[in-house]
Length: 446
Image (cartoon, rainbow, N blue to C red; front, side, top):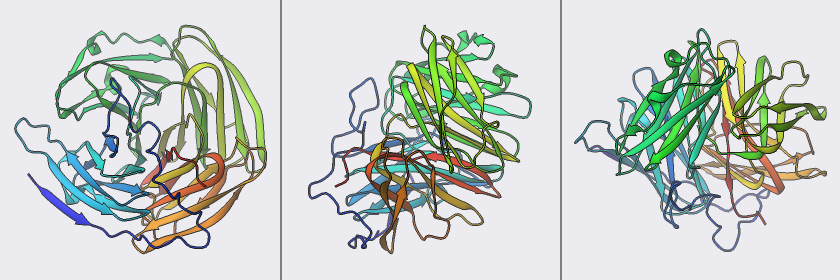
């Protein structure tokens, strides 16, 4: 067993003049941190975050970003998919309101390495960024999940590849049923019923050859026995992106849906047995376009909307539906791919672990205020080993606000706002394009 102990002292100095005061009592865990089976389960005083898409080899590496609002130790565990082989482990200490990073190559360099991270205190959050040959991918890991995972945003057209990873980090074996719907209807996937996934292992399902020439493909994973954490990979020969599955909601927000020189598609999936009415609001630097378009999404069907006809970059979006749906955005540029599910709810406090300066890449976080008719203020704090510093940002209603963090020395960020909003971040450069969700914190900032 390889063991690696990395002690990172992350600044616990008092926040600067711009920072909002921390709560006097310990904050509540992140939303969904403690849930009962059949979903993921974590101890009440520690958060466990599951990251199915980590990988490291000679051509690419993954960097785990961790952030915590309380002093904590983050313990990393990477199961080895060989019977009898011991797992790889590592640990990082985060002191105070701080963040840290861990390169997977310092622990294991054997290709795919799904893993999980356990904190001794929180609120906390984890992300994984993969960077290397023909890939720039990033997203938040998951601490809880639905019993049914949906993956809108897939495609298997010429030159594209789509792979589902099913990760079982638990000591008991699991069985899952995988279904799919596309632009031609419900797909025949009888071979993917009661698919076994061994304890402490994972398996991949390649839809590139299984369901060819589908432009709008939504995959659903249901655990029949045990608990799993799935993730999806979509890409081309030039770039690829991973993203976690989501549940169902009647509203989804995208603080960023399109950036300059990309074509963006909004995918809405109706998993129900009745048609759903959908209204889509778009948000530009010039202001909102309320009900930019409406549509009826048929039962058990996905709908894919091309946003290129609407002006304004950057572009944010909101989906409001008459019944439960899932939603994601797909952004395609020249040799670029990014996919991101929406945020089902706004929050006043968000953690963005792993958001940092990348060589030759531009990194930004995005704020969207649709909950208030007035402008709100948000404190954007850089979490680093040299301390915590922040800046105050005004977020007008219905306008996506970009905060360029390319030059800041940080290993993560904390956003604390006067009213609920949604937050995401992006990275862009020679390696590709990545969209990543932020992680909401349950307590309200004072």
